[in-house]
Length: 122
Image (cartoon, rainbow, N blue to C red; front, side):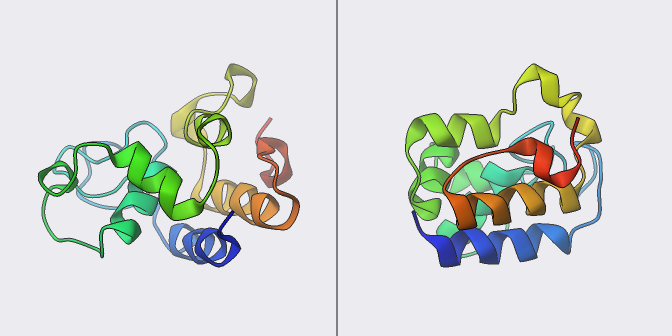
């Protein structure tokens, strides 16, 4: 686990505005990228960092963004799935805010566990 990457990602995501998938920038858990190709969710933002903050569409730079994100964070694929695709009991993805995602990431950095409830998500 790459704690420093996880904490830096938490800070980066917390700075983002909570937006929709069809917006040009910001944070939403509804898609890896916004319609225009900029990072949207935790996996998208982590891949963006891993790829050196490219401009333009992320899929033009790499086809396996989840893999890039997983490697950047230094977590196993099972943990990545739970982080990138929260379970149904968490609620609707579009309702997850940047601060809730950041709290979940900080908890992961401290404990090694993904727990979406720490950020106030159901």
